[in-house]
Length: 160
Image (cartoon, rainbow, N blue to C red; front, side, top):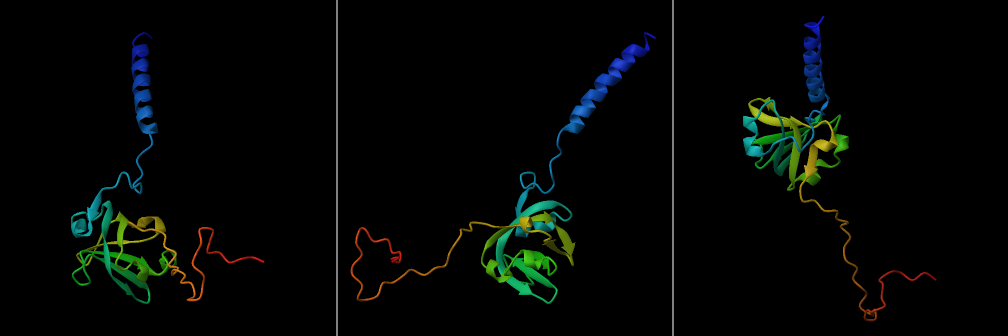
């Protein structure tokens, strides 16, 4: 019985190390902290890999079943294309609003006709860089006969 006891102790110790290693949380493939960030021009070197691709939307093409966002250069010279199938397009709103914006796309880079692309399935795959909330409300111009503003003026209508 003595020869079995050291073997059981060794196996138990080995199992505890393996269990501790396997119980550690694995990094998520969609977690942006674990993904590498590349420019649109580099995407063709990373087919089949999960990446963050950055670039400027220079062309938006809306077809009956799909929308294309071409980054950095218009089609056919675009180094990278973002594809939004119309089943998912309602998630993204007006794609034309992205024209001229710098964006990040997260996902697996696919090879479509020897060109790199990522097809978007969810809104968390697309981030507009440097965006700020804009209300697009024009400044209010007072009428010509209005008195000059005072320090107590609030520019709010008076409630009677």
